[in-house]
Image (cartoon, rainbow, N blue to C red; front, side):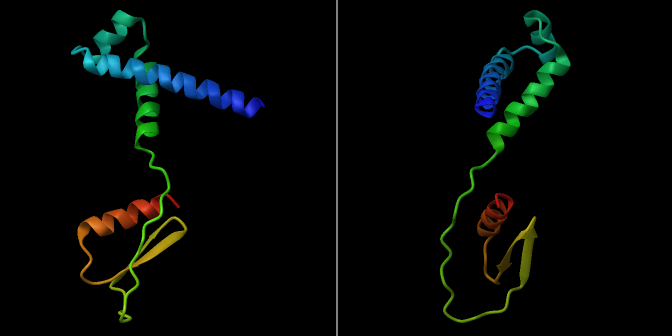
Length: 107
């Protein structure tokens, strides 16, 4: 119960600060000026902006369908991120490699 209340409070604060960050960024004012006018400490604003951006950029884990190769080729590279790894074969385009790296980061 305590954990869920803490999570709810943290999500509520994140939502409030998300609105504040959006208001500041759309105001056309400098962050310092906006903070002064709204009674917000500059360090507090940047702390919450970082938290909001981190929450926005976190990607949900997902699975990607990988076609089965008919002829066994040897990998030209192996990408290891954290405890996950994937073999890269010749002819793979940049977009596929980027997708593989995102998937490995989410593991």
